[in-house]
Every structure is written in structure tokens, then in C-alpha cells.
Length: 137
Image (cartoon, rainbow, N blue to C red; front, side, top):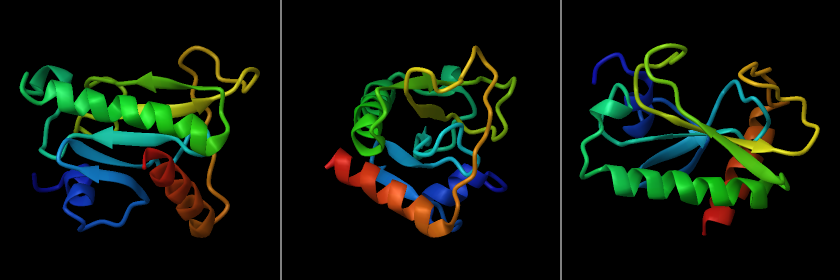
């Protein structure tokens, strides 16, 4: 879809630190991560919100989210993940995306207050992306 940042990332027109690119979707690092290693997983086609995702695409998309949720702790040494999805409200890009955020006990994340952290450099972001991609196999 024209003017959709995530469609442009899927198409390779906008650079991103991709961790997975599959028929079921694309996963890439959030540029404003809650914690380093925070991945956004999007369907390949433009879908504004979860209720718009066709039933045929649900199993593959959520299997991809599940795979990313398993890989992020392995790659980041986190103890688990927080997986979330906004629909319209608080959805900064109107393209369905699942947040997979690495979590550790005592990390300071409380409720729906999401502090944001930056990567120190593109090299650091690329290193996180490679680690997660490697953990995905």
C-alpha cells in the first residue's frame, strides 16, 4: 500500500534490521525498542488491524510470531517475552504488527508504560538482528 512504512520495509524499499523474511511475514527490529531486541512481526500484505487479517493467514502469521517469541530470549539472554498488538489506538503505523519484547525479571516494565531505548549504533542494532536471525535458524 502506498505510504505505508511497513509495506515499504516488506518490499525492501526502506531499510530495516530484518530478523526473518518468510512467506508468512517479516520480522524486524523496532527503531524505538522498549528493550534491545524488540522485534515487530508484520504480515507481508497490507492489513490495517487484526480483525482484517484473513482466516487463511492467521495460522502462518501467528506461527511466525511464536517462532520469534522463542528466538528473542535465546538471542538476547532474556528470560521471556512480552507479546502485544495494538489495533487502531496506539498503533503508530496502520499495518498489523505484533511486538515481541524481551523481558527479564526486574526490567522495570510496568503495565502499559513502555519506556523506549535506543541502540548505541547501527552496528549494535545489526548485531541484535543477526543474533535473533541465527536463533530462528
